[in-house]
Image (cartoon, rainbow, N blue to C red; front, side, top):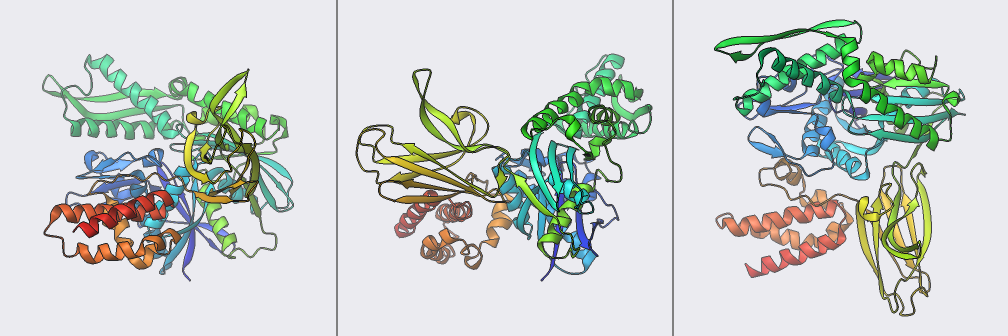
Length: 583
């Protein structure tokens, strides 16, 4: 059957865990490290390296090494690594593949499935590409769970019969989340989650980095990066970054440290260094606003859960950056005496993911199992025309499933035709918290035809949203008078235009043989066209233009199939058919 593991895919580091004798355990990398740098690089010969090996070349080969791609997940930004460019989820798939390899070497057998964690504040698109990255790495990913929820699971598995309200404060390398959960009768119920996916340890590091650069300029009266080529600039930046990270870590246990970076630059033909004292007091001064900003999310989460600070029984500090003394002081001040020890901030999320995997696969056999509920992270709704202050407002956002709704859930609303003799209705689906639809994220749309003609407001349309545990949304629109309906599974991937040298063309697309991708229902509609294209393309390699055109359309169809975009599949199928018959 193969093993199932839990993975904390972090911004700066990642961890893997599994269940043994009902207990979660961390799997080390090939060097014995329990924490794996989330870094991807290339050697001079083009060989891809991941984890500690890639981290080791960050300073010497910054142009061939990349870290912290998690913040770009869900975007179509192309990231250069050596001589090629990759999408964020492609680089994440390399990290996941490496973690999978570590686990398989550890077990001596195949790993087939994983539960992967994401920040609570991740939107549907970011969750979907995380799942896709796992699949590209050769993992079956049936569950994506929120990082704070995973940390609470790690705590709750041995405290399932308690009755208490828990606040998880998760400050990781690149993201911040706060979640409030309640344990009762073996149930772990998420009450609310709020977060900031642009706040984490790297932002604290950045303040120290900027301070070092400014101090250099004060001392030497020179811009540190002036007259340097790009590679040298990057190399110096990485050395400063490493010094900043080390200083931050040292100040978690001591009041003063020394930042020493030898031979950082050359001035008047002489090498110069950075050698300076750096205090916790100065670090706190530089980062005070970052620490204080987390209280806003704590207060938002408490308000959404309809709780006060005094109602919280237990506080879990999670994520490496929660070790910062000023962070602990702030949380202790708000929740006096409620922070518990014994939870490893770096490992709790991965262990919780492993427990979720163990529950799913029945590996955890304890009598008192833990049932986990979760919440919707964003408002989900549609675009409507409404009247406000005596004015007609077009494009208003009408929420159907509110944020913090327990999932899975199903909600329905009724709308009416807006103009006389309206024969069709376009259902646009959005995700977000703004009052106007255009200010939120559009995650899909479809057309409902066949509305009987009549006066505005005569015909009613029921719109139903069904939202499952993995964040997949199904929308059904029904004309009440006739019963005609259209169903659409909203999968808000964008069809990303990929460069010819993208990893997707080399590995992901290569996996899409007929047998693999025809598992998708939509693929059956284009089976004959694609099979014909596969036969013809082998005879067209000498005709570079036609070969590239057909290959491009085949690749786009395959992506459109996976992204469940019915209209795009139909459009591309017609285009490919026309092209094939013209040859």
